[in-house]
Image (cartoon, rainbow, N blue to C red):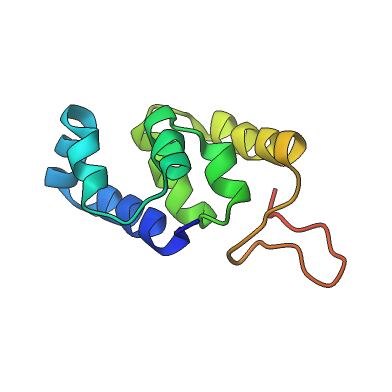
Length: 106
């Protein structure tokens, strides 16, 4: 997982109209500008908020991504919950399970 690059792409997507245009019209070219794994590319292409979340993408960044791809607030929260129930606890980032805790922010 290249968490830094996934978050950097999503951060830029949240702020830059040209990145938004590329995401909608030439996603492969956009992703080529970041060091992403094949899995990460699939998660982004599919808008898989739950998978991105359990792999450590910050919820604030994901919130804007979810809105960008057309998810409302309840869908966004449910996507994170679905990620946790399907794949287990958060594995990286600030919501990572530590010291026997539950991990996750939802």
